[in-house]
Length: 209
Length: 380
Image (cartoon, rainbow over the protein chains, first blue to last red):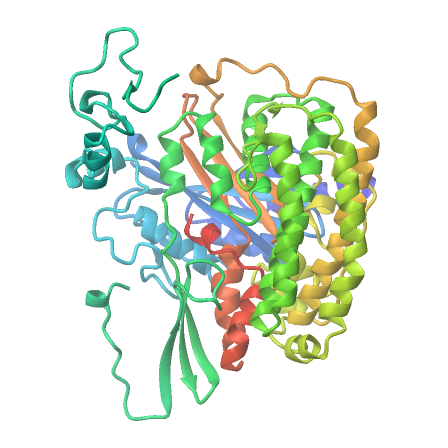
């Protein structure tokens, strides 16, 4: 334990070399660092090169439209110190351009490509900014808060009443269970208000219980 | 890749040609495509093409209550769904500061290790099938089914369990469950020598898997390879040991490693992990009767649950590697942002693209299965 503590104070001393960063220790293995966007590459270089944080676990992007900012969070893990540093930085939402850290961490290429696709943040110097998952999507970046997926679905798709021919035949022969249109899940009829209106209408010809 | 959107690339006259593997192909794990550029039967370049399984889970979760999202989480990785549930619950518990009762922690470990067994058996089958051996595939899937039976008994679901909720687990074990788990483990232990004879002493598998898709230690660390794939390069690194969660610090287990870094070593590490998981489950089964306790702590009304504002990053060791959730709450009844980092996001894209260069065409599928890449994790 004492060795671990010595290592963490050594890390704290190392981080004092950088200016304009705010460090918060959340637990013995979790460290949160808030850093200016301009200083983040230097911080990551320091963490990787001199403090053994060789494993880039993930890059997360959070959209804050009220503050007109994107928050980028770089989670790096040190196998030697056994601790995780989450480096938080904020970039303006417009134009949404930032520097790639691909030259420091190779795995950044995947996460930057993903963030570019989902949030529309362009990373300068990233090896590949082409589409990956949403190959046939030409709408706005969908993970942004101002993209309302429900409104988009309502604007582009119709709900169908499910009443295929084979079901009509069965009902005409007096079998099966028929659900009235106003009780169907996606119907646009009046809301059932009477008590018991949600029960299915059972054809008595087949159900003798 | 709809036909109307596909444009064949025009190359200058050469001996090279293109080949699309997937998105629906027996040599691909799940709905995932891999585009190869070939010279003869050597791969010059491989490009991963995802998106066939994209369901927008991260966006969906922003529109649902914290408790409703439990139904979404296991669907992110189909073969190994349990760690997804547990890690999401760990994240919510961390944000709320919930103290989970000890019995629930042990039950979660029981479930997580059973899931690891099931996922490794599944991968065995897939890996063997890519080398032309179908018997291990049938055996692996048949034995996995025994574990799914146990899950069905425990929580009603065979594949998607939704057994965990923030604060604990949904229900306790049925009577006699410990005995039945123990019997299944006994049976699996008698099967392990059969697997050795069938796969690891089989010349077909030895010659096909040795030296294929080699990753060195430096490359593994540089490409963020985790899990059994990292341990196959000789590094005994495991989130269960390095960054303990649940009660893994109270359990005795080894971290098996191999030195080769190739497909053979990766399969062998998984084979050894089967044994370690059985060892862990036996410890859990021995401990559970002495833990009466409740199985979950009281939580607020889940339909009007405002999780305190904050953010957390939770890591876990799934059967495929490091699994992590970044969860942000702004104090409302729905998550503000959830981001899942699955191990296959590295293995199925960058690592696979790099390893496929220079290999033979018939080894591409084997490399993908030996990396245990899970496309639903990439697409989310």
